Length: 201
Image (cartoon, rainbow, N blue to C red; front, side, top):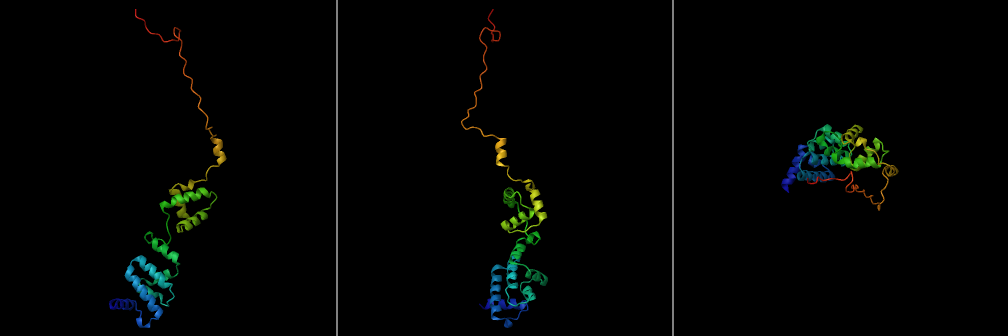
């Protein structure tokens, strides 16, 4: 449509990218990027995904051009250029936390406790690798230490040996019947230990 074409031309002009100098490949990819922008909006996450794609698309556009196109600063675009797709998604996901890597959530405590119980000889590095594989979150040793201490997992140890439990609590026979408690014998009548009643006078 004419409106879409005019808007696309204005988008390029705002970034100081001359439309007539684009190659067919650049024109096709940028039109697709413009359509993505129109459909998904210009929020942080949509911009982050689109900027990562354009910075690694091999179109031959300069970093400054992509930065102007998406209203990013030049240093921000340069930093994003050196990140992998995984790192870009992690930074976008944890933007509100103000750090490039993820954080340990309360719901991770159960799987981490199970790992510690089943891997009693695991090192702290093994635990960090398990967290990375399971939750796709890379954390520091300090973060792991604080998390374990917070949820009491720093005292988690392996299960007791079966033989020790068996020695401590011997099995009770299934057919064993508890011995009957003998009833207290009552004293025979007219003896010194018998209960007496007062006779009428």
